[in-house]
Length: 193
Image (cartoon, rainbow, N blue to C red):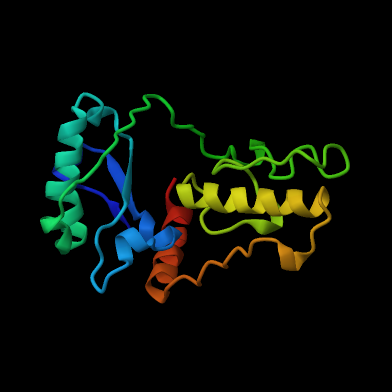
């Protein structure tokens, strides 16, 4: 239900991620009430997208539906857009320099002893023993930190038990070829100046 767009000439150096929201959020009878699906709800986010800002909303939708989506899911070639919305937010990306991780705010804010009702969420927070997946900046990390912040708030302020908070699924173990690539990279980086 999700995939990444990378190295497409149409993106002019940008990257993107698309999500089939109806599959992530549950299927409604209007879309999935028949034997055959009646439609889908798709969201796409572009990053490093300065070169796309000058495109019209219609051209962005056309690029998405004619080129990008069909390359990921061939059945999108026959899709018909019923409704669309494009939001453009220039300069809204947070930039962090290498080594700044320890300067990021912690998920627990000032701490449960000082301000138990304040938690911090976003891809830029340190999650302590609840770190999940990549430590880079990404939507998935922002989502998980939001769930963890809500769970922490429920426990510290509302006294919720572990069984009444949302479960955060663990990240599956890296595949062997990826582990090998990381190992090789680490060895090469040790000998480079």
